[in-house]
Length: 263
Figure 1 (cartoon, rainbow, N blue to C red):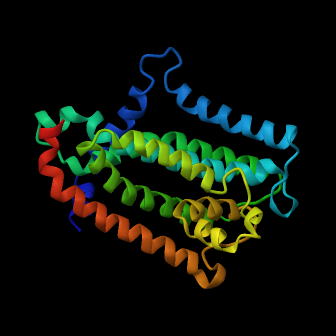
Figure 2 (spheres, rainbow, N blue to C red; figure 1 turned 180 degrees about the vertical axis):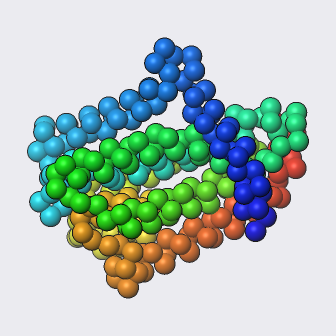
Figure 3 (cartoon, helix red, strand yellow; figure 1 turned 60 degrees about the vertical axis):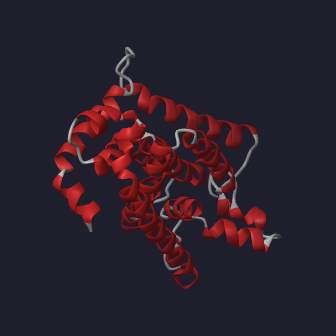
């Protein structure tokens, strides 16, 4: 596929600019990139303090809330930050689009790489904490989830980065949608709460965000969403991801020639 060929050909450029992207986000602060790790870490810990120690909530199957919560929240932070930054990437790198001959297709990947440093840090924090509580991770499951997460992000932002470039207001709408998805995804609450509403439960379980959050969480709980219910949720997830990539790739390629004019 053309996109994969372009990405592979320019992988060194994408990696170099991705590292610079992360450093530049905090270049004007005295602590620099430390803020990139500190802010989401404190945010996650505050949720743990409030829900586990103040509200006294527990995770599923009697697990500590911190063990149940951190993996799901780490994946959500990865999804949210990567989607928002990659969707705005072409506008943020408008000088590359307008002034030089540059492979525009890899610009969302540059922002994705920049977001990945914090994402990997949060995933490591979740893994270490769960291990300390005696919940040994399934390494193969974790690797699968990471691959699935990045496949979905690339597919999703292939579409949203093109739309945001053409319609700047879409970034604000996307921010609102991601907030709605956060509360619709079982990150801080359990799907067992919807046991009395089977229709809503099925819709929530079929959402890609739910699949990814649940899959990483189950990597520490000894469960496996990949094969659960004959793998129906896995099939649905990959159908949605592939469809979004094909659709997004079509929109991106058709409008790529107009990006320089609208920026």
